[in-house]
Image (tube, rainbow, N blue to C red):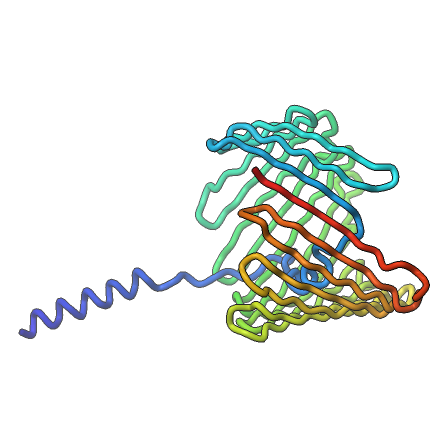
Length: 291
């Protein structure tokens, strides 16, 4: 009896060790304050866009048609060949390579021809108490962007800088910290050599994160300018999302995003200026269809 009890205990302990999750790494510096910014900025547009994408079941061929009503109107058509290891565009010739050498190391390279100025090489490394990221631009004046964060998945401190190889100087130095909890996310970052300060906060009112409110405040010391934006979002169901925001300039924007099917959605955004009541509110429409 005693031996059978010991065997059961060993099996339970082994099962619990298999199901236990590995600790998460701290956030990358580029993700500090990303969730509040996405709530108050992402999706709000007064432009009219229509996009259609088609692809084969094997993912070998993909075509995209994007029509934007601007002044003047613009039309963008692209055809690309997609494979598991690279993505080659037949119009702008974009080659993207990505590989995971280690479970904690991600690397990617993006080469664009004939305009290679926007080509980049990127690498990200994650550890239990640290996260590192580097980016190298293939420009005629190449730059290296380095960022590092240390801490835990709950509290992290980070720094980011850009180094110009030609002048051998560090052009930008940004720093900040981020605190992440299940019901809120807060961060404070300072950039532009201490001239720009931004604080952001988002709070979730339920464990499924369907209802949230966010605030982003920034200060530019050289121009003595302050900016404040507050907003909220409500995920009504699996296909409908409502968002709204208001800033210190008196502009109110609202957004309705309706999912038609997988990866296809209709977005309607409107803007109302409380300081210019004689103006007609702006309305934006974006329709993305994936066949």
